[in-house]
Length: 402
Image (cartoon, rainbow, N blue to C red; front, side, top):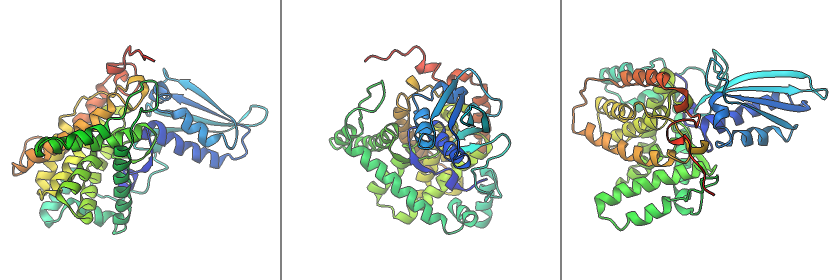
């Protein structure tokens, strides 16, 4: 498996696969072809189907246009075999001849891949790739998941996770402070500030849930408006992990060091799914985004509360299992409906999974790795209209009211 730095990417929304990835690809292509007279970029499949709502064209044009004019070609009906999010970059000379071309795929979490390889990823740093193996290692050595992360990544991972946590906190706080309407044709009002204020009027148990909702909404709304966030594991699911950890930090006063360890554990969970299945909504639906984020947050919370490696694995398993089959059906191709609400609900569900697991000894029948396998197969079985194309589910036949 790759470094969790490849999972936790600091950048701007609204979509890791539709905005971050194409922007990174455009940067690389521009660096290779600085003398082009014109750029032509063809977007395929899911990337083309919802690219306008996700601002894919803006990300590419803003990156390439300082060098040369850009033409965007949309091909939503053509799905390249390797991955639904395909892009063909072409550099043209003054006579319109193609001087260079590059087919690349945005495979989720902001990561790029050519067919059969991942040129933007770091080298493998983890020698165990399943949670079953790592859980066995923890039980044999008496160590924790975060210690396995440190062993593989080196002590410098803590400096990186400190930056991740700082960015997450700032995205929560910015989102709580902002009001108004999110960009796009849905004219969706921000709700994080209202939820935060209203939560203060409830007694402690309801207040706690309301605050978690507000934190998740805050980050998700920042993402929807193109603000700086951390993929955890994606832009579309970026509100879940920060909401849970920010809430526990505020309410339980956990130290920064313990938060970083929880982030390491959460990153390991997300990394296992990314390596063995997918975190791309265009490939496996929203179960690979919000479902994985819920599993990550559940594991992080359980660790903070002193869960054993077996209990942490169980919390993560429940977080993902109960999102199996979730479709990715963004209305108008925007990362707003139902994405923002899903982040809030998943944050609450992560805390529930943590609590449920805490009442057990960690023993259960279905392993996390088995759920990952099922998620992958379920995602492949889903029709393409339910995988970030904006053609099915909630997105179908939706009419915009101005």
